[in-house]
Image (tube, rainbow, N blue to C red):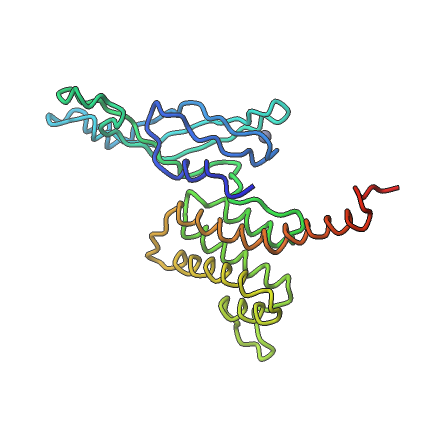
Length: 256
Ligand SMILES: [Zn+2]
């Protein structure tokens, strides 16, 4: 399964009355999370402005909670979401009726708990990689820059598991770029995957900057690149090995 497209949908503002995206369940990974309508709480400043003579609904804003549940009856995992909303002209309103503006609430998700998995984790990936993806997933909506940094760290965790150390024998620090190069140069099959790692590293560098304006959508694009790298490293070899056992048995390889 590639990176879940429902996550990009959740990264955009959602207009009231529109269906919410249904991400894959982080618990069972077979069901989907269905969300009910969000409940808003207007902010104090927003509520105070209602008495202003020039008040218009476009001034309203606040926070919201939303509840989701896995639609798999064997799982029913609950998911809780929070975020901010603001009121603005409806994009659904009838354009022929220009004299009567309709307003909608626009919801922006900042947290989901438990977190949605940003990308699938191959079964044969080392635990360090699993931990790195989980860490990035926890902050995907709250802090995209931090999520990109955690994805870069996932590449570094993978390099550590491959014996590419973060320090030289002299004790000098070995940065991510140098470590990816060292890993790449050890095997002639690695340069295409190393290029994917470099891309994740650049996004991570952009996310680490103090003034980072990286968006959740851009981080998800980075997750797609890392997913492809892991697919080539882990899933491809898993399938090759399975094909070999079928070939050796000249049929399904069944345990006696
Ligand atoms: Zn589930």
